[in-house]
Structure formats: structure tokens, C-alpha cells
Image (tube, rainbow, N blue to C red; front, side, top):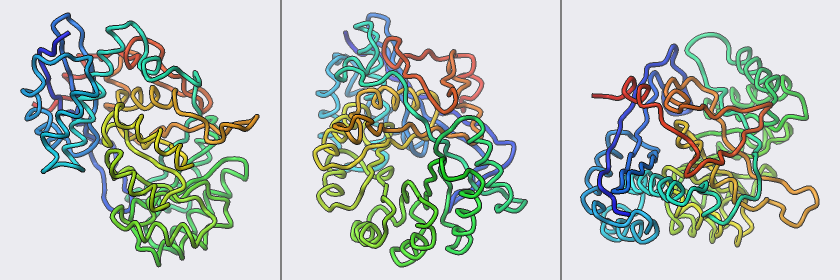
Length: 377
């Protein structure tokens, strides 16, 4: 089964109101999708996390190397592309581009054999996953100490058992927001915080000590991803579990994090860290180091579907327990007009629980009318 075409689709949609995390404002949402065709008529879909035009350039540049190759040789093709670009792209947009290609090839592989990707990855350990609501960003107007707890309480009412709050807006302000959200959702709902590497270790430790009393599930990206020593310092100083890795790439990058004992929870993005082929390797390695794995997910329904296929096969965090603690799906609740619109059947939650697609490949179908509506010409 030969690859006959590889196409990129850059999508963009404006938002009704902008929102911010610690380092930037969003007034649009973008996506970059990869479409791969084969000579027997099968089409696979992938997604690249990262700057859309840059990842599209990577995929378009790599595509001629893959035309005519056997689409089922996913590992061989991954290694081929990585080796040819090793001198120039061990991290960043090159690996993000490779991730989208790899996911699309796994989609094809599943369709070729008529099974979901998780069956080819080793078989599903679960049919559903608990999702946590990612939201609680900042708005241009109104008081965050009013709208953040209201938003968090809304997620709890929907049935989510865990929510994640964006921090990194100043230590005192972050501590006040954390307290307000905890009071709004009560003690039974898990609460995580995410600084998007806004702080250095001194500031991160100070914030962590102020919010430890609020039973924080994890402190995500407290310091910049390059600062492994900073991660270790924060981890040593706090009782809060430390999470990170959405800005790390391939098993080689995560090897360094794991050997350094810098994380309690690894968060590779399937659409950035190397695709399904590489993230399965990272997951196996995280288990060997006793580090939990909860993937970062920030994209369209393709990214969600790919992450669900991987989540299906991940072991429990506590595999020998009679009541095992399972990995969770990050379920973005911010405005994203493209996210579910490009799927013929959206991936939704039911009281905070998301079913793992069991159709062939990623288990999704693309609405080409919606694709055309959002595509940047």
C-alpha cells in the first residue's frame, strides 16, 4: 500500500472574545491538519500542534521523501524522516510536522486492517476515560475573582471531576484566584494549575507554598522547559506534584527529563512530541521511571481522537491497586469554532467521561464542507 499524496490544511477561525494565558492573548484559533492518500483509496488524517504555517512547511518539504513508500511501515518512515533532519530538527516544528504525518499513517493502518488504532498499539485497557476541563483563562474585562469561580463551578455542574486553572499572572493574584476556584468547586473536585512556564524557580516555589493548602492535583510548567534544574528545585520544595513536557520532544528529550527526576507527571502532546509511534515509546519509558503520563491536548477533534487512542492503551498510574488511578484526557473547553466542526460526529463528554472511538483508525470522519469553510486559502 503506497503513499500517493500528502496534503496540508491550514485552518483559522476568529473568536467572539479574546482570552489569555500567562504569556499571550488569543483572538483566533488555528489548526494544521495532514491528509495522506494511498493507492488503494484509503485516506488518513493527522494534526500538528504548533505554528500552523511553519508545521505545514515542514510537512510539505518532507512529503516528496514519502511518496511511493509503504504507508504501513510507520516506524521505518518515522526513523527515516528523523534521521534525514537530525542535524536540523531534533526538537520543535520539525518534530511537530513529523507528528502529524505519523498520526495520519496510523489512521491509515487502522483503516487498512479494519480496527481502531488502540488495537494495533497493543489493545485497549479501558473504553472510556475521565476528562478534566481545561479553561479558566483570563478575559479582557470583568473581575477574575468572580468569573473564574463561576466558570469552574459550571464545569463541576456539567459533571467534570477535575478542572485546570491558568496561573502566571502574578503570585498574589494567582493565589487569590486559586483560593476562589477551590471555594467554588468544593473539596471533591480535583484542581490543577498551569503557569505555562511564566515563572522562575523562586517565584514558582513561592506561589506553590501559598496554594499547597488548596489540595492542588499538579502544578504544570512552573518554569521554562529548558530549566531542568529549576523543575527539580520546585519539585523538591513543594508537596504538589509537578507536571510538564508539552514543550518537549521525542523519547530522547523525555529521557533527559526522566533521568533528572524533574517531573512527577509527563505531558507529551501526541501532535507535537513525535506522533503515536513516538508517544507510545515515551509512555513505556515513563512507566519504567515510575512517572505518570497524562497527555497534553490542545487542538481539533483529530488531536482529541489521537490522544484517546493512546490513552486507551496506557497503563494505570497505580497498576497493582484494586482501585487503580487512571490517566486522564485534557478536554479543552475554551472557544474553538474548528474543534468539533470538522468531525462528522463530534467527540463529546458525558458527565466528564469521554468514550474512546472504536471505529477503524482514529475512529473519526472528516466533514470536508467544514474543512473548506475554515481553510486559509
